[in-house]
Length: 150
Length: 150
DNA sequence: CTATAATCGGACACAAATGTCTTAAGGAGT
DNA sequence: ACTCCTTAAGACATTTGTGTCCGATTATAG
Ligand code: FES
Ligand code: FES
Image (cartoon, rainbow over all chains, first blue to last red; front, side, top):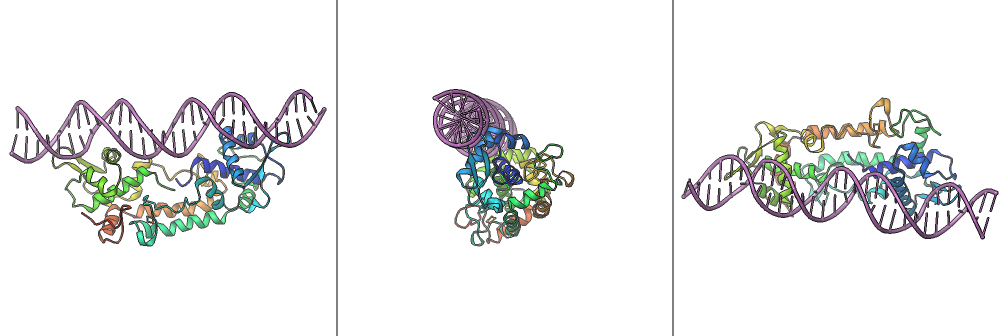
C-alpha cells in the first residue's frame, strides 16, 4: 500500500544516513546490516540516489555514502519523486489516465482531500526531522527489537 | 500508489455491474469492452470474486456475472480485502513487519491518522453508492471520452 | 440431441520488481 | 608501486504481477 519496497529501503537508508555525523561517509554494508536489507540491492538504490543528486559517494578507503550538502532538509516527497517517479501522486485511484475535476471518476471528489493530506504529510517531513526522531530512541527504523544506534 | 491494477479493474467492474439491473447477468466481454480492459484477465479477476462470494456466475446462454444477493451494499474496503489480501491496510508505511504504537517507526504517529482517513473512506463507500454516482453521468469509469452507459 | 454461448480451470507467456553476482574503477594507506 | 577497501556498472536470477490461450464444463434454444 502506497510505497514500493525500493522506496521503503531508500527512505530507511536516507534517515539512517541523516542520523550519522554529516560529512562522514557511511558504508553501504553498515546501512544494510542496520536495516536488515539485502546489501547488493540497497547499493543499487543508493547509487541511483547519487545520480539524482541527493547523496554523495566516495570510493576506496574511508569511502561510503553521505547526504549531499544541504540535503538534510529534503522532504520525503522530494525523495520519493526520485524513487517512484516524478508524478507518483498524479494518478487516479481507479487507474484512469487523467485525474482532474473535469475527468472525475466516481471516487475522485472523496479521494482528493485524502490524497492532499498524504502529499502534505510527505512534503512536511524532512530527513532531518525523521533522523532526530530516531535519535530520541523512541522509534525504530528496522524490524529488529529496538534499534540501538551505533 | 495505493492500489494494484488488479484491484482497480475489480472495482471498476464491480461498479459497472452494480449499475446494471440486478439479477440480469452481465457478460465479461461487455464489461471488458466498457472498461477497455483485457477481457481474459478480467475474467480471472471476476472468477476470483465469485469464489470469494461477492459475485454469482452463470454459464451458457444468458450467462454472465452479477452481484450476489445483498452485495450491493459491499464497501470498497470489503472488496479490496478480497483482491489485495485481508490485511492490506495493516502494514507499516516504511515496511516494518509490525505497525503499532509500541513498535512505531518515525512516521507512525503522523501516518496513522491519514491511514485511518483512507480506511474510513474505503469503508464508507459502497458499490451501490458508486454505481448511483456513475448513473448520474457526471463521473467516468474508464478513460474513454465520457462513458455513455449502455 | 445438437448446436451455440458463456464461464471455469489450468497452463502458458510476458513484463516489472526485487535480489544476487562478478568485474572494473577509484581512492587511501603503506 | 602495491595492496586493500570501497563504490560503479552491468549481467544474471528469482519472484510476483499482469496478460493470453485453450480445452472442459454447463446451460439455453431449437
Ligand atoms: S479521477 Fe479518479 S481519483 Fe481523480
Ligand atoms: S510503524 Fe510505521 S506506520 Fe506504523
